[in-house]
Image 1 (cartoon, helix red, strand yellow):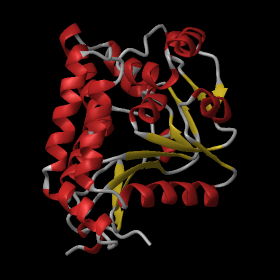
Image 2 (cartoon, rainbow, N blue to C red):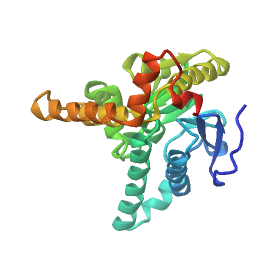
Image 3 (cartoon, helix red, strand yellow):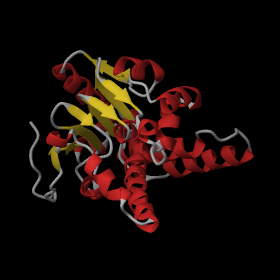
Length: 272
């Protein structure tokens, strides 16, 4: 059972709770289909940083209340932004880009729990998480070009998740696809038939992540970001050699090897 952790701040547009090592951040604007506005973007960035700093949280789940996961940008926010100056619009876009970067680069593993529709920036949230579990048959779309705008700040994450070829189709046509197609294309890792199965699959992934060395998991996320897309040459070879050297000599590296050889649980599982 999740509990409201008194160490967490209160937010107007989302909710934070914790179940042991799993911190859940729930978008909580169901009446607006959890669409972004400037308040939600700012609170989401702050809440992610709060979860990153919480010593008991080892895994972060991004969830949503209501029928929709996230409908992208709130139309009222977009209408206000249309009247902004160029500098104000740029500042607004930079805040959204910073929030997505916070999510993507978080030092703890992230799981998107996708229980409903996701459009535009909502697809960007899914792509920015390390992994995603979704209800089968839920609609997704990158709708920006229909509105005369671009999926610009979400594009690095969407292209990395879908691949350039598939991103060209869905970003240019703005057509709908479903979570089954997203699973086939690699945006979604697991499909569930109902919410009970969705929760079970999220819990299984979270349990697997929480069983691993927190330091090694964070370092592995950083490793993936550094190596992905790079040619295998002297620079990558040297970087990866230095990384394994450093982690072997770390406290958790020494403890993990010792625990394996001694056939006992490592300290990060026992709390000793």
